Length: 306
Image 1 (cartoon, helix red, strand yellow):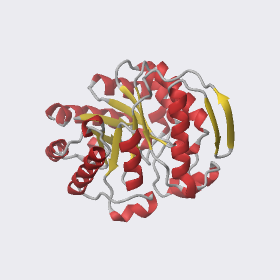
Image 2 (image 1 turned 60 degrees about the vertical axis):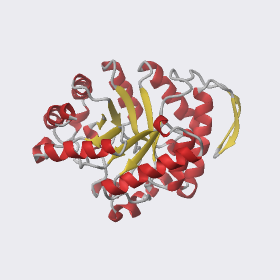
Image 3 (image 1 turned 90 degrees about the vertical axis):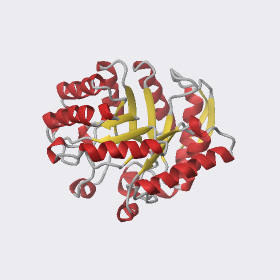
Image 4 (image 1 turned 45 degrees about the vertical axis):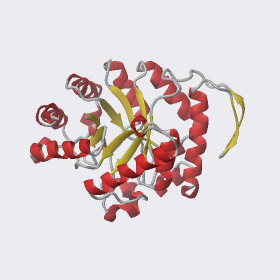
């Protein structure tokens, strides 16, 4: 099993101390030293005050943050968890990802979503009703840019004629693409275009807010993994070429909450049995020391026994 951890600024209780240069350096280098497989930041540039005040996740600009982390590490993968391509002109997205791929030495994995916060979409000039179409269009542009192709397209709010955006990506034909794919539409896209199916375990009580489909239990997750495999086989794709990524199996990791290591090890075993390749999880961010201690606890008590 591989493990990806999101920086503690994703904690709604985050404090400014967690994003100082010294602490981000310590977090990234500690995760690398302890053997974590990827580090990540998420993407919420313009959430509403209401969402923030009601416990919405914290955030720092993911490209700036991951570029900083790439500079202070050498081997751990750099993960956008998750990037919302619909929030930007696709040429800007493609250029940022390609540059980060070069500056990290080809360590970028592009985890993505289509977004769910309507207030944020409106603030960024995005119509929530066409977010899927915008996503697919953005990925068409990005994949051409990453492959080094010239692009001509009439898109959502832009017109490109023979655009050559450089550099192309270092990883060929592009960095691995993961998508939050609880819905049938997203699963179809991943099976057709992606390298990672990112299934989010979430109950019925939250799907109205998150605008997705519930996967409330490990058993339900297993059924979805079977569905992904069947879809791969139906289109002639080897299911083994698509990473299965779980998120949501655990609440935010905080060693002060005395997490149950035995239960977490059992969770890892159950997910491995059904073919999960990665588990991505969030880290506490109200105290830098607690974040580091939580990383160390997880490495010693869960990862080292998995």
